[in-house]
Each structure stands twice: as C-alpha cells, then as structure tokens.
Length: 336
Ligand code: PEP
Ligand code: MN
Image 1 (cartoon, rainbow, N blue to C red):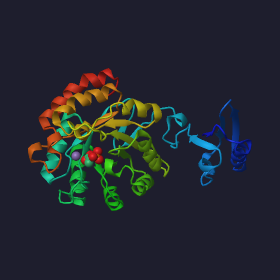
Image 2: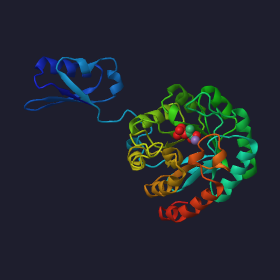
Image 3: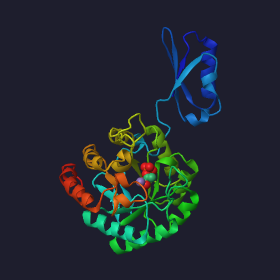
Image 4: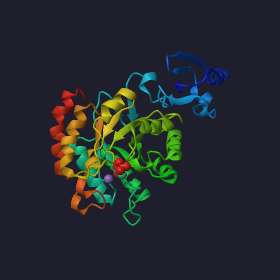
C-alpha cells in the first residue's frame, strides 16, 4: 500500500501518518520528492483497518499495490491448480465440457440429454433444479425431484453432475446429489452463500457476476477458499455492456487476465454469454484458443419447447457437430 501525501502536506502531517503506521507494527518507508511525499507501507494492512488514514491531515490518496485476494492469487501460488471433481480433473492439461439443459424439466428430458451429451464427449451433465429467474412467475425449477433425476443420470451414464444452488436451503439438499455446485452470476456476491459453499468442501463452479470486475470475481472466490475449500473453477459467462445484439458480451480477455492473476482453472459459457445458438460455435473455438480449461454449453432435446433459454440451446445434433469441430482446436491447444 502506498500513501500519497498532498503537495502542501506539513512535516507534522507526514510524521503523524508514519507514527500511526508504526504503532500498528508495520513499516513506513518515506520517499520525499520535490513536491510530493510518498509513504510506502509494508506489513499486514488489515492491522490498519478502522484507523482511517485516508482522512488524516495531509493525505491525498491511498493506492493498493497488492490485491486483497491472497489464496486464489497466482503470486502466492504460481502453479496452475488442478481441481478433482467426481471421476475427473479440471485443469491445464485437460479440456472439460459440461453440457445439458438450462433447467431440468422432467425425467425423460434429462435422461435423454444425459445420453446425448455423453455420446458427444461431454464429461459433465449440467441442469438447473433451482432456477434464478428474472420473473417470479417463470418456471422456478423442480428442486429435489430434479436432483433425483440428475443422480439417476449419473448412475446410467457415469457423467459427473453439476447443479446451481441459489440459497443455503438448496445447497443443503444439493450436496447429497451432485459432484459440483454451481454459483450463478446472480449470486456471485452472495457472501453468506459463498462462505457456506466454502465450508461444504464440495467443488464449486463460480460464475462471473452480471457486472462484476475480475477483481470482484476473484474476491468472491477468496470467500470460498478462505473457508477451507480450494476446489474452485471459474466460469466466464459474459457481462452486461451497452451492446444489445447479444444477451451479454463475452469478455474473452478475462481468460488470459484471470490466468495471469490466479491459479484457478477457468471455463467459458458461450450459451449465456450470447443468448444466441449460432454464436456458440465460434465463441467455443475462441475459448479454446485463449486457453480456457473447458466449456459449459446448453443443450436441449427440443430447444423450441424449452421452459428456459431455448434460443441459446443447441439440439443434440448441433452439439455433436460442435464437439467434432472442436477436436482439432483442443488438440492444437495440447489438451485432452
Ligand atoms: C445457468 O447456468 O443456468 C445460469 C443461470 O447461468 P448464469 O448464472 O451465468 O446466468
Ligand atoms: Mn440457462
């Protein structure tokens, strides 16, 4: 942390700041320029909480030089993490595809989807049992009944299963069924839920919030890891911008940026990023090219009949073609 003093700050003001820092057991390094004095702070900054240095006499501004997230930070853990989930691993040598319907609608829809995505090469079945819908009148999900279909799908196909949880109550039920919990965009900053998911120890897919910066997203991951759960995979799913041609804007640069800042794996969800079926294929290829560790794709036996997100869902045939088309890209990226 660096404290920049105002150009006219008095000697007393500078001394008051340095002695406050030292009184908390931290070191203060002074750098006196012709106009401005800068105080570098070394040590555990949390000890300064509540001391209100920013409003001390003569202080202009405070600049943080290290991020507030530590355990997910690459600086303190340079090797990329490999996250074990169910019968597989997500990380730098593999390319993981999670696919399935937006919502679990009924038994046959889910089981058919499971067989289809398995046949095409996915290793995870996705499907929402607790749906975070914009309108309270839209289909909210089958809850535990849906989770039972997910469990059956795992038994018959061997796929790993992932399901979003939107509350503590949903989480307590879902942990009995799933291999991986999903925290959706709308709950990325539901800090109480993040802490509980952290305590559960179950692998988590943490989606980026609708309008979250990358640092906010990594701080959300820090909530989970700081409760003792290091099994976190990030998912870029598009952010809100002024563009209306797509549902969201896929922040493709987030993948190399996250890679530079964190050791956690990151996958891409081109379905929610675009909201449009035909854009799923080019953005899936882009995701592989920029180094994503996998994809999450919405697939439905009849997108036109889907209870949610039909326009972005692929048919089984389209998903088959996509998986075939992706093969040379995944191979070129040196992944399996
Ligand atoms: C989902 O994956 O079903 C979902 C609701 O996604 P997001 O949280 O990214 O909107
Ligand atoms: Mn969806």
